[in-house]
Length: 462
Ligand SMILES: [Zn+2]
Ligand SMILES: [Zn+2]
Image (cartoon, helix red, strand yellow):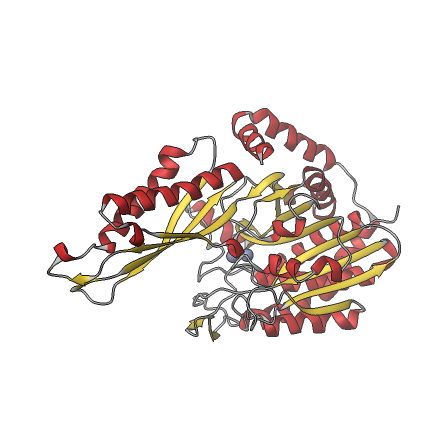
């Protein structure tokens, strides 16, 4: 993780390093178009109408994380007739009742490397407000049994559709490559435990362990038709913590007989904000967000406890460990300061199963796919994007650096809409917004062409 620090610092402090990377991309971009690119575009164009139908079907029927049963079945039903060996229900690891809706499809096509391509399948508890004819009206119960509106607000329906498009193209272009292709339909990305669940359920014993892994993600802040690449660290570590602030309950009119966990929790929330501002180096990246605060049942009762749910984003493991320790220290110290007895101090937990490592895009693989994208989509279609503090569990599939991984972004906003938003100084609706509306045709076309081109390059006959 030290290299990460140096890598990011270099990007910030030494613009020449970034310029050199861009120059390297430009140099690679000179590669001439090939006959397979024309064939690939023609094949993709032929599949586009049925892919659009599939996309709209998936968009109208989203499923929450860990409940991707129908989406997984739909994906498996698309891949089996194409000749892929399909395994379903991978990832039964965490919840006994959870069927683990992971899908793995293998296409063996002679000697050569193994490439994994991952598409995530889950949707979000968001009420869609796009007004599109195929907008979701779906509702389903979450794990707590509470009914929620559901929307593909992160565009994972595009990812599943693109995976099917790539699957078809790779079968039709079988004479162009040699090796093994592994396609993964991953559940539970939004809860960042789907990839680890599949791994712990023996993913790499059930399918050949890949030599590289690729994934794409749609991106609202990029016009459809373009792709974005980020070499090196691109997405942050995500850590979830709970702080149960305990008090001594009592009557709201008699605070002297109680220890108020509401006031204590408020104090802790404010103090937690000093971790990033006063304890973490300005050259490191960290975010501490208290996303929920819940406690109490009635206005004149001092409750027994208040629960805080935290989300922490970092890039460097030592910074992550520091923030975790600081949350525990501040919570404990604030409680002691409030006179809380030892047996009523806050309970601080890190939720291990909901951790996402940083996505570290392998530099060589990034250069390689960027070169391929420039050739297949045109040099202007490829842009370099800076790292973000958002997270993804795709990095898990790289087994902590053992397998090179690359995630790239696919522009999703209608180009005219994008230009209008930019002219008005606005950002088009982004992922997780109830208004997020990828322009399906150019987005799916670009995603399928880019991913197939990258796969053909990686598995090219030597
Ligand atoms: Zn998301
Ligand atoms: Zn997503």
